[in-house]
Length: 384
Image 1 (cartoon, rainbow, N blue to C red):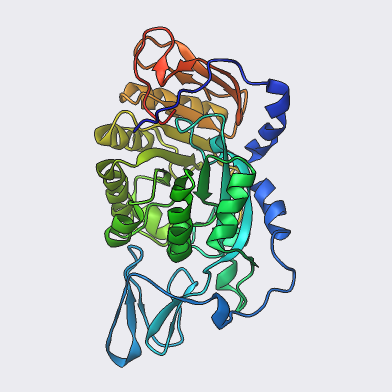
Image 2 (spheres, rainbow, N blue to C red):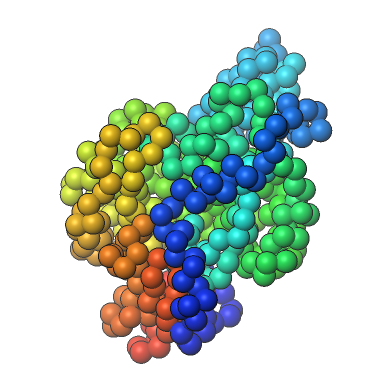
């Protein structure tokens, strides 16, 4: 997938953008930000923020079956699905988070991370509470898991128009549905996405890849790009650590490419969980089998949530993971969360020239011209 506009070949102002690099510590920044992005005394869920859900069927005895994600929850009256933000009330399934934004802000697109999508631009990012995974090492657990432990849905009210207006005011080229899991607020996201396209703004999902095929078919009409988190290549790991299954995620990765959605994949390399050379090679080989043009981000883990005893990922492991990705034929492999210590740069897959030099989320130099390598003219995969 390509855009008609070329990226500037001139170096960006490093001093102006250097401040963004502090975000490399990941979503610790978000933890601080999110605590201040919603009222300290949130209101109880009211009819005003409830919206009848899409993608469900009614069953006997007022039960419903949700078709939004690959859990396919059967939900009894007055109960919620695994995501904890879709509730059955008298046989009608409701989304409890429509327009209830728990975090919003302007991020460099590189923070998603998306390195081959409009590099150097900014993205207006939003999230609601809730997630359909229960990852033990979740970096944003304070907002993704909060709806499981309280009757209150925290957040501040935003309309789709508010979101798009905010994006335009900050000259954002994209709106990212991120931080938690965008699938669980699909009803709100879709309304935003439709307005965004009318305003010339692209839409980006940062997702765990558990969206159902039915829901993705609808979402894909307005989705321009995505980053899917491939957490491991063992079904046992998904079941034990996330409360999910591996195969639906692999199917979603394949489906994104079939639908023509620009895709990048991230793997958080967690010591003792998914850091063996064998498993990293299996991940790289799978991605390459789908498309060697898919960028693979291998990111450093740091202790979080319920996985505090594991050490941070050694930098040497990330270096080796990148080597494995290149050996398996991937054109773009990036090391994340270690600015200045890993390979964050984009190279031409044909002549190997350095094209985009980065430090963290900041671009020091961009030598891609009209989507092509300045040296050999090879078309670089992505949206530029």
